[in-house]
Amino acid sequence: MTSFKRYMPGVLAIAGATLLMTAPAQAGPVADFYKGKTITAISGGGAGGGFSFNARVLGRHMVRHIPGNPDWVVTAMPGAGGARSMKYINNAAAQDGTVIGAVLPPSILSPLLRKKIGYDSAKFHWLGSITPMAQVISVWNTHGIKSLEDAKKRVVILGTSSKLSSGYLIPALVNALAGTKFKVISGYRGGDRQNNAMQKGEIQGRGSFYNSYKVTKPHWLKEKTIIHMVQLGPFIQDLPNVPRVRDLARTDEERRIVKFLQIGAQVGHGFYVSPNVPRARVAALRAAFDATMKDPAYLAEAKKRKLIVDPVSGRDLQRLIVAAMATPKAVIDKFKQLVKLDTVKLKKAKKK
Image (cartoon, rainbow, N blue to C red; front, side, top):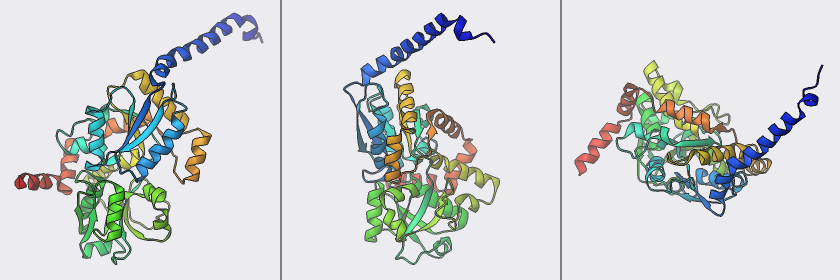
């Protein structure tokens, strides 16, 4: 057989040279932009929570893969179930790729649940997710509440940041599906404040992400300081006997509603930038995120710190969120009715 290399060495040499010239040409402007700059990663969770922690670990390694090797700092902006930080990034933060959001998943659905929230989740550029994250409703172990059956017999007081957070939406939906008596008090911004409130006895429990407990409160899990009532999203292998919200659904309509609410869990530790960031920088940040997910140094630190790495690419995340934002209005309206979001709004209006 005739060798292609033998008869076309010039073509191969030119092709190779073209590839070598193209990569720096594409990376050059992006590297020039990021050189000497600092990327601020804004977490929708509290400063002491798992979302901020994951953002710090990610940044230590991702900067090596971003052209220009910028610095990386993390700041927390909890509030409104993460919607506060997303609104800020969309409307007030720098729009040039120097601000990255570490999403608090419930905020992805907020534009469908409240009018004039200030952003459209589908219009952000999604860079990727470190891992999907299952959610749990958990109670402190001193209150004698061991299961959902106990929560049907007595009021269980939970704390959360706002009525748009999963800390409100999940227990409110479980109340509607299973007849439990969860009562949710809002105003506790950030998971660290909610955890402190549980410890002090101000509240009996809260909704959170199981991975966050594994990272920030592993001793609580080991010592069974908290008892898990129900789980939502990817099945938690550690909790084989804890019921899933999807199994509480009785009709196709209720199953569609549970699927809608699970979007946040599917996104998990997701990262994004504002819609106005130039496409070349978005592409560079997505490539840097993907490279970090395979970086031996990052994976070694993640393993040491017991972080779960099961990445979802930015493009797959984008498709998931675009599809979620196209959820039929009838499903959303029924969900809002079940969790009494419209009632909450009317009560606020009367107080004014």
